[in-house]
Length: 144
Picture 1 (cartoon, rainbow, N blue to C red):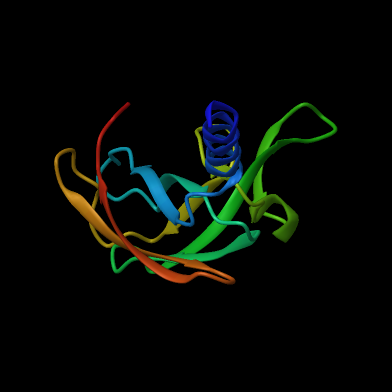
Picture 2 (cartoon, rainbow, N blue to C red):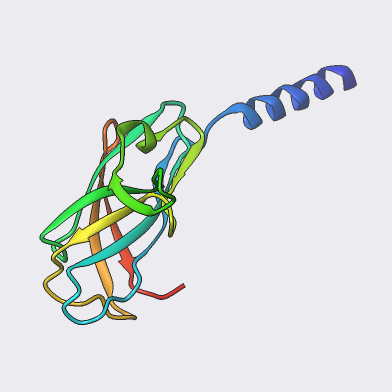
């Protein structure tokens, strides 16, 4: 009986450790403040893919930006930091991994915000993934 109980416990632990949470979610998002009349702003987020299937970020929309683009910061041949549209491969989120957008890396570029981002306010975003579809997110404006 002890052996069967031990085998059952070991089996349940192994199954529990190998299964995904089954959820794909935005686990952190934020946008720094912007000066008045800034032509652009930036939004950062982290997407956790706790599912058993890979996915890809395809877009982020908000009414606080005329247009949004997914950008990657890269160092060019002249050692100058430049922002470019992110290649689709950079936006892949493998199963049980996360896509992290951070200063100096991947980010959402907000083009022509009609008003500045002010600390303490929130932005309403729709984050769209290739497989999971749209996820609505409330994002705080804060300086980290």
